[in-house]
Image (cartoon, rainbow, N blue to C red):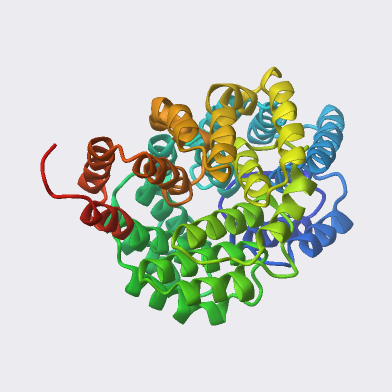
Amino acid sequence: MSEFQDRWGCPVTAGSQDAVIAYEETILSYLAMQTDIADRLDSLFALDPSMPMAMILKASLVKMLATAEMQETAVSLALQAHECVAKIPVTDRESAHLSALNAWLEGEMETACMRWEAILIDHPRDVLAIKLSQLNRFYLGDAGQMRDALARVWYAWDNSVPAYGFIAGSYAFALEESGAYERAERLGRDAVALEPADIWSAHAVAHVLEMQGRAAEGLEWLNNLRKHWGAVHNFVHHAHWHRALFALGLGDTANALAIFDGDVWTDKVADYLDLSNGASLLWRIQEAGIDTQDRESSVAKLAKALSRDHGLVFADCHIALSLAQAGCMEDVSDFLDELDRFSGKPGTQSRVMADIGRMLCMASVADAAGDAQGVVDLMLPCRHDIRRIGGSHAQRDLFYRMLVRNILQLQQVPLARALLSERLEVQAGDYWAQEKQAALSSEFC
C-alpha cells in the first residue's frame, strides 16, 4: 500500500494509481446519480480489495439506502475497513472518515456531521465528506448548518476543479433550503449548463421555482432536461415528482396523475424516496379533488416492505401516510407499535421519532380516518418542529397542508387565516395558500 493523491488533492492509501482512478470514477458516478455505481464499485474492488476509502465509500453508499439489511452490510464493510487500518498505515483523513462512518452507523448523525465537517477544514475538496455532511444535515432538518458547511469550503472551488458543477449544485440546494433563492437559482443553472445530465443541480433549481410559485417555469425547466436523465438511478422519480407538483400548481390534475403513472410510480420503485414520492403525490392529488382509483394500494405494498427498517423518521412518516391512505389499518396498528419500540432505542432518529415523528404518523392516520380534530390536536402544537424529520421544505409541505386542511374542515377560520398569512409572508408565491386564503371571507375576525 502507498499514499497517492486523488484528483481533488486528497491523500488516499491504495495499492495502485489505477485503483485511485477507479475510486474517483465511482465518486463521479455517485455525484451524477448514475445507474452504474454498483459496477464501478465492483471494478474498484477488483483492482484493490483492501483500499480503506473504497470500503468507506461502499459502506456509505449502502447506508444511504436506509434499510435494516443495508445497515448490516455497511457495518460489515466498516469492520473490514477497521481490520485493514489496523494492518497498514493510513492518513489522518482516512482515519477521520472511518470515525465519521462509525458515528453514522451508530445512529449519531450530528456527531458524524461534525466529523465530516472537521475533515473539510483541512481538505475542503473532499467530495465524499461534502456530500455525506449534506445528506445527513438534510435529514436532520438543519438547513442552516447544511448551507454553512458548503460555505466554509466554497473558497476552494471554481470551474477549474474537477466536479465543480456537482458541488455548485449541492451548494445551490443548501442555499435554496436556507431561503437564498436568487443565488441558489443562479448556481444551479450554471451547474446544469456545465453538465445537462446533472439531475441534482436541476432539482435544486426546481426547488427554487417551487418555493417561489413559478410552476409554469418549473415544468418547462424539467421537461426540457428530462431527455438527459437516461443514466440516472431512482432519483429520476423524484425529479418527475417535482414535475407533478408543478402540474398541480397549474391546476392540471390530469397531467399530475399521468406523471404519477408514467414517471413517478414505475416498475423500478424500490426505496424510501420512491415511497415518499408516491404517497405524498397521491395525497396532494386527492386533496385537489381527484379520485386516484386505488393507486394507494400499490404504494402501500412498498410501504409494508419497508415498514420494519426505521432508517429515517422521514421515511416512517410516509409509510404511515401510505398505509393509512390505503386503509391498511391492521398494518397501521402494528407499525405504530413498532414505532413505540424504536423510539426507545439510542440514536438521532429514535429521538426524533419520540419527539415528533410518531405524532406525525398518528396525524396521518387521523387524517385518513376523517378525524379533523385529532389531526389538529396532534400537529398544531409541534408544527415548528416538523423540520426535524428531515426532507426539504417542498416535501414537508405535505404536513402543513394536512394541518390547514383539517383546520378548515373544523371551520376554525381565524386560525386558518392566521396560518395562511404566516405562510404567505415567507412564501408569497405559494399558489395553494393563495387559493385557500382567497376562499376565506375577507372580513377581519
